[in-house]
Image (cartoon, rainbow, N blue to C red; front, side):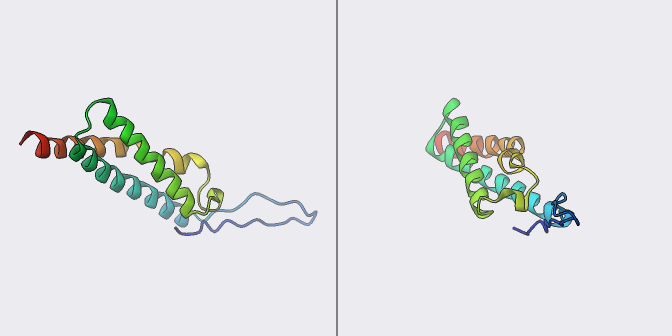
Length: 117
């Protein structure tokens, strides 16, 4: 992940001003989150389809995959999320619903190929 370029400046009175973020690095970090979630949603959907998950079991599997993805992204940032992103919500929630659509598509596709045909 690219560093956000966050820096803090001290004023003449010793107080710390707000951090300054590099917009290009933040945008690059958001792309990494989006691509990671999409890729793992596709892989998770194929695995859920091959294992034959149906109904609520498949959606619970998706939540588990996304939880593991969030922890892995936070670990990649060394749990110092504010260095690379502006909030924890970016790591935990961004790309969640877009990934859900990819998950369902590949889940049903893999299930049909393995268990129906």
